[in-house]
Amino acid sequence: MTDELIRPARPEDAPGVVALRGVVHPYLVRGVESTRRMIAQPPPGEDWAAWVAEADGQVVGWVSAYRNIQTSAADVGEISTLHVHPAHRLRGVGTALLDAALAHLRLLGAKRLLTWSQPGSLPFARRHGFTPSRELRYSALDLRPAPPMPEPPPGVRLVPAAEVDPREVHRVDAEASLDEPGDVPTDALGYDVWHHEVWDNLGLDRDASTLAEVDGRLVAVSMVKRDGDRMWSDFTGTVPEHRGRGLARLAKQAALHRAATSGVRTAYTSNDEANGPMLAVNARLGYRPVASQWSCLRDLD
Image (cartoon, rainbow, N blue to C red; front, top):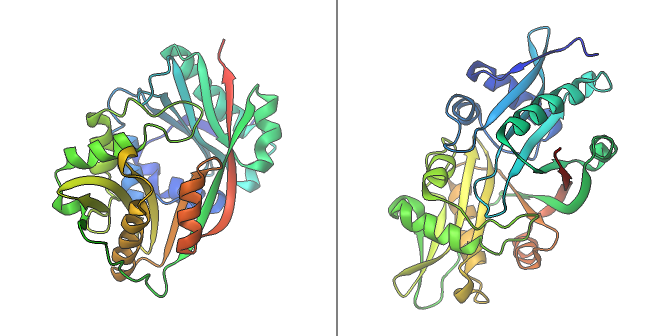
């Protein structure tokens, strides 16, 4: 039995949540205000909920759980970023947080669960009935000096997201992610949830986020979420009929250039191990591996 208090997360926990994440997952980027809004105003339709472990007034553990409404797969629940401060491990904190998440997902009627685990936490995941499935690779890029602004070929224009109708940004994002590797397809990316989670995210840098336009039609995107001098490449992709022309790399290099010239010093991203094209793009841009996680699956009785 843990002595730490397990309770629902509150908006005022945001600074502690971000500080904890910086210890356990330093390659993840979400600022305090963005985290505060995430807790206070969860995405519509997901039945999102989160819990913290508190000890001596400090946040020492975190987990969130929600219904995945971005996939056509039925009854999928997700448990996101379960983590505990190293000084408070082996005391039952992780199990207590997991139990809270599982109870919530049972109430939602979830039947298939998806979560992620650092390699060192895979024994914990297995003990709780999860089976490792896919490797997710995290990479970092030093943006000093700033990458050069790429010169697009004739007929291609690189456009900041700030100058684009968000419905068009959503269209490209949704079309490009249809075949993204994963345990469940991302084939039901509705506009309302996307607008809440992506476009209205307080960390979204619309000036750095970049789309590639070919003959007047937007066909590739690279989105940037930022916290101070750190950024996260939220999604980079090209609609299927325009792949093989280097447009994702052009959009991402332009996004990195714009972010760097506005003060970003380090860029982070992640890719499924099977996403060879984006791994190649990132390697060409100079990213280096910094961590990995595994997706883990289980059925929920």
